[in-house]
Amino acid sequence: MKRRGRKRKSGVRREPNGRALRAPVVVRENVMAVALAQPHRAGAENPKDVLLESPLGRFILQFKLDRNCFDAALAYARLTRRVFAARGIPQPHKDGHKAAEGGFGLSAETARHLRSMLEEIDKRL
View (tube, rainbow, N blue to C red):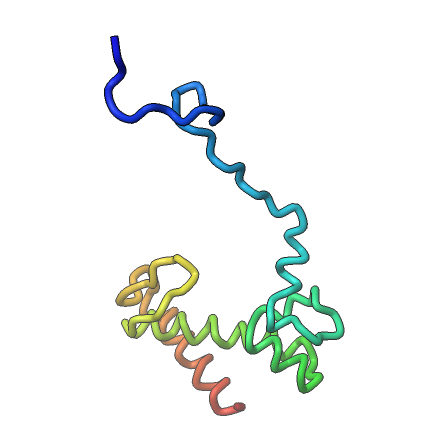
């Protein structure tokens, strides 16, 4: 009895299900080389430095500021996001976490405290 469809090409190796073998997936063995080849790490003293991954970190390194400035800036950003969430201001989220809407989960007292902390920091800045 004849098979339906096109004839199989001769000499082609096949999988057990009859499909022609696919090209093997290339596995990158040196992931660090790929990471270090990124343009924002080029020309850095220490290309493995964690601060190079963000614009703020590159700013800190470029102007040779204290690394505590980086930590303080992140803490300020975190506080600002919490105050905005308490006020119900929608926040962009790039890290995959859903932004808190309407400040749910924060008491009014906590929201007032956060707002006063932010205002105090803003005066210093």
